[in-house]
Amino acid sequence: MISHESLSRWQSALPFWASFLLVPLIWVTASLGGWWLILVPLSTWWAFAVLDRLTGLNLENADPDATDDDLRWYILLTRLWVPVQFLTLYGLIWYATRAGHLGTGERIALFFGMGVLSGTIGINYAHELMHQKGRFERWLGDILLAMVLYSHFRSEHLLVHHRYVGTPRDPVTARYNEGFHRFYPRVLRQCLRSAFRAEREKLVRRDLPWTDLANPFWRYWALQGGMLLLAVLVGRWGGLGLFLVQAGTAIWQLELVNYVEHYGLTRKHLANGKYEHVHPRHSWNAAHKASNWLLINLQRHSDHHYKPDRRFPLLQNHAEEAAPQLPYGYPVMTVAAMIPPLWRRVMNPRVRAWRRQYYPEITDWKPYNKARTPMPR
Image (cartoon, rainbow, N blue to C red):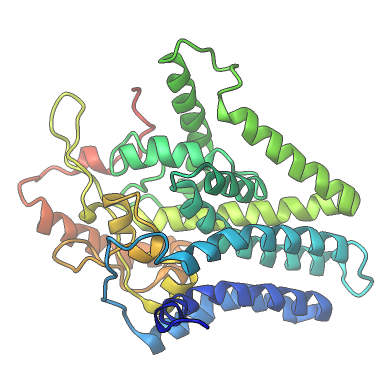
């Protein structure tokens, strides 16, 4: 018999399982075709934006000292998503390449929706998994990232982004006044280079060449190659094309979120190339309840950078006096990011207010505003 305590834990975790509802939804849209195919993007972008309005903010915090046993329903969620996404992706490739009722445009639309799913949910869950200490969960994260051909995200995120966030050395920190359409190609180029350089430097410290098998890029390339090969085996060349549509869409979704998370926020430069420690004020925070269910508390990003080892249900919400607040959840803010004039109108005054609040002593922000390439380490 299930104890009251176990039932309570399951009930508290249940809203975060909402992402699994997208799996039967995408299969239904695939079987119907036509305009039904826009339901998955609409669900993640607009439905959860509406739900945010209805459910409001969640300002409560869980006990940060809870154990993994207390969190088993939350942990199962991220682990189970890996086989679910794998079967959904390759099942859809098999189905779409043989479905007579789907035209070429409909197949592309279907896999655009699949990319929204594997980017919004899959990469986000990979992010949670790769932050864990256990090798099993990190491998699960690698599998999810290989499905979108973005395996180097693990190295870049753990070795570069968390260390250099809010400084010119971090490609992912969007500079003040830098529109997303300039940010995106820059990040695609710089993140791959910075990730490879970070892994190469780790090997150099061990007197090993970059070609050593300890370099995780060999694992990244092998997993990605396996995913591409499987797409061809399941759906031939058409299946490969659909796989690439999905992967490209997922990467775009990830970088949209990256753009929002730190836009215009910088750490104070101290001296000798050093910067102040990372604080909650160096990430945008959002307490919107429904979108945090969908994104497993990713919007509590201020606490994630402050305490990167915390599992997602334990991430703390920081009030306005400790961290800058987004006016809306990520579903709305990522859409706004695609329209630079709108984005600047909404966010630039907030960045300037953030500067006045936390760094009134800095009068010249020009060196912080430049979208420079990462500085050598």
